[in-house]
Each structure stands twice: as C-alpha cells, then as structure tokens.
Length: 207
Image 1 (cartoon, one colour):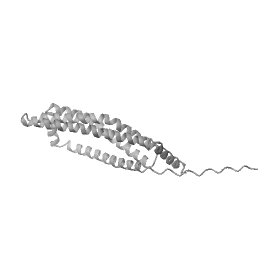
Image 2 (cartoon, rainbow, N blue to C red):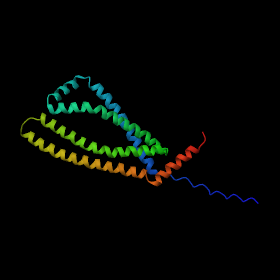
Image 3 (cartoon, helix red, strand yellow):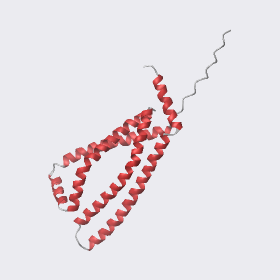
Image 4 (tube, one colour):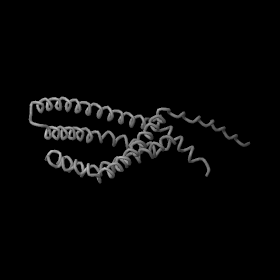
C-alpha cells in the first residue's frame, strides 16, 4: 500500500512593501537629479563667465590681497575634484534609489553604503565649512577700510561666524544621525526579508 505524500503547506503571502522606502528612494531620486542638473549648469555658467572682462577684473582684484589669493588658489585646486565626487555620488545614489524602488538586494546594499559614506563625510564637511567661513571673514576684513566702521564690521562678522559654525555643526550632526538611522532601518530583518523575497520572486520569473 502506497503511503500518501503529505500535502505541502501553502506558500506564505509576500511581504507588503514598506512605504517609507519608496518615499526615501523618490526623495533621493529627485534631489540627486536636481543636483546633477545644477552641477552641469554651474560648470557651463563658469565656463561662460570665465572668458569675460568682468571675470578678469574680479580675479585681479582678488589676487591683490594675500587672503583672497590663497583662497582662490585652494578653491581652484580642490573644486574640480569636489565637483567630480559630487557628480559621482549623485549618479550612484540615483542607481541605488532605482534599486530600492525595485526592491533589489544590490540596491539596498548600495544605498546603505552611500548612507555610511554620508555619515563619514560629515566629519569632513563640517570642518570644511568652518574653514571656508573663516577664510571669507579674513577676506572681507582685508578689503575693509581701516576706520571705526571696520571694528563694527569685525564684531558683526564674528557674531555671524559663531552662528554659522553652530548651525553647521547642528545640521551636520542632524544629517549624520538621519543617515545612520536610515542605514540601520535598511538593515533590519524585516526590510532585508522583503528585499530577499522580492529578489527571489523576480529570479523565479522565466525569461
């Protein structure tokens, strides 16, 4: 007598999509798309303006003071690399966001990597912002006339500088915390199970 084969349990229903992941992915897509567009427009605008007499006059005026000349040299040295890095980061973020929307495991891992990089980048961006504001303060004071108004201007700049440093530190820590929280959320078992299940269902579809 043949033993009946036990019936297999019905397959588990697919995990519902987490709506917040779609929101994060679309926000990243829109912001990075705008960022890529703005970088392109800024490069075109700089190329057009750099060949005008007004640009040459402004450059000679800034080169007249050692403070502004040093800032221009530093910006000229580092700006191209920063623009390329920003463009690369935005492009990778767009690809990762599409992976999130499609619930691909590689998209989740890539997005988590970008978030971790964003946390680490705040440790560079905050001191960079402080250095830039300090350099701009030195330039303004260098071009100011030595008079009673100069001392008042210095006090105003010092107050503005302190506020700028505090706000830069605050928002840097906020963004670092937000990036870290999102990276942790994307690594929770619930989210990982959703991506694995979606990826397995996609691979099972015959081509």
